[in-house]
Length: 277
Image (cartoon, rainbow, N blue to C red; front, side):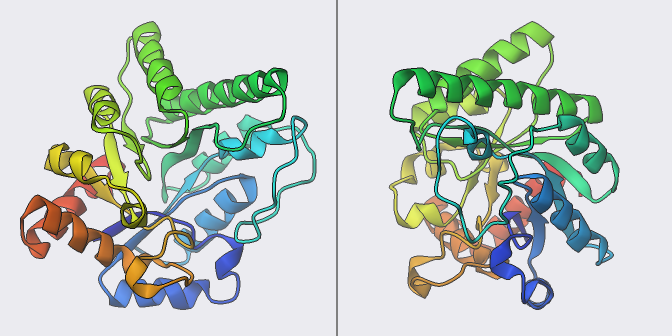
């Protein structure tokens, strides 16, 4: 099976990334390490290149990093600091994506309205920066014929409208996944209508996502951990890792009323199809 959204490339694994990766392989779990800024994207590629198979990388700029110059956000110590104040050069991300055949997607990119500036003017500035960055990175994905890993938090309406507009204006489809899906079934339907997959992880221990999990076509479901975050509730407040994607798989199989083995086969095939791995 594949953990389609991991961050073993993050600071949380700086001392034992290779141990965690090998433990995942021994447990039958492949890994897609997802970039969130230039440094973590580069690190994802470095890790992927160390192994012949079953580990891949993505490159992208998470929307929260666009808060710089708009408002101050809390530094995520689990990630890798990227607070040098430099302006973003998306051509660097393009070149990074071209630097390795192990890069299988552009992401994670998208919209995040969870952290909000104090004024409406600042919020609109933040939204505008995010949308501009999203469009630019979607163009990279289109040019390189790569799927997209979308991040969306507290912004499903805007992201869906933006994607629909992009498809109409460019007369082209979009492939990829809305990772860590937390929306309603109605929002899930709209993403599915756009041709996207939905990624589910340990957030299902905190939110009731049973309706979208049950109703989403089974060939459009991907499993993930988003490690080091969102550890399964059975394990308590620990650092999550790719091997724990098995807990997510088990819970989805239970909700879908099919065997663990069948769900494993289906989601593995889904990951292979989306990311061409």
